[in-house]
Picture (cartoon, rainbow, N blue to C red):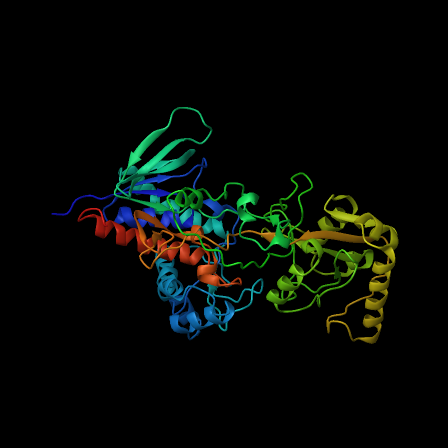
Length: 490
């Protein structure tokens, strides 16, 4: 005889919401716990790009595609370093996830499916996003959750921190939790299984730096503050295995926040547009030695990202002059809202603490802590390349204008981390594994707590963060609800 299974899902981002919704729709009683006062996790700031092949939207646009070709692209872009079993488990179903969203009336951006040039591009357009980016995903998932909460199938515990996992005879049987502000006492909640959907650790620099190459300890934090690695830490207390692949590739173009050392300015507000597909570069990029280090018009995001990792303190300065401020049709600083106009950028060049300004190149260099002679020599050589129409140093072909008209400006940018590369080891049931490779009974994990390396290897691969979170969350929720209805699994 079947029974109503109970499930605890820790974390209310894309993976936790999809797990909860799917499990509840298939008969499970679910407790969804989040330490924040609202659901959504990184969907509040994420572009929310997801990918899938063989979808109705592709066919409607005459795009021939299938999961096998999608997977081949994932392997190419990731240099074959994904977990092939888990990556295929997701990719093989991601087209279904896109069609599922379509069936539910998701607000697709009219440009989708498209090619996204912020990462190395797919061979065909298979990336999608909403009109309001990650918030479009969140709105739809909250709409699906609402009737399940109203019916009592799901109980949501907000502003609630899980302080530990409860085990009985080696099996995870529940959690200890208390209010996130520390008030009140600790209480316990039991369930047939617990799912860790707690996201990443990038806002916890002490933890993050355990997984980064040693010279990358100063990279900026570009994610929201709640990403402190809670699920990874509590699972590790039970002996869970954690990957240490040693992969890191940065996000470029984030601006250090002068009010929060170590953090980036919220990229919903401002970031530097590095991709020439979206903006013609009028600037040069120099390192702390005042030297250019890569062609600024490269169409390879991976090339510029990996080259930045080789620079001192993984830091760069984007240098330009007043003529560029006036001539560039698209401003250097932008955001997802599109409200950085030329006029706003020109005003920021005069007043913003994000931008260093000086009447001469020598003074600009001193303000940045660069050797003035080095920066002047670099700009002089670049100007000669502009005059010749050829860049002998890096092969830049887009050479719109000399840098010679004061005042001169620079925006400092530091390599940034926005998602966790490493994470909990799981099998193809998404059961968390111990150091010996055995499943920890009753404990599962999904989403960024697994680490992005599982789905993207040592690179960024379009849509291979949010989409596996949603796709495998739905898959896990359905599977657990079905299996647990006959009693707790081993």
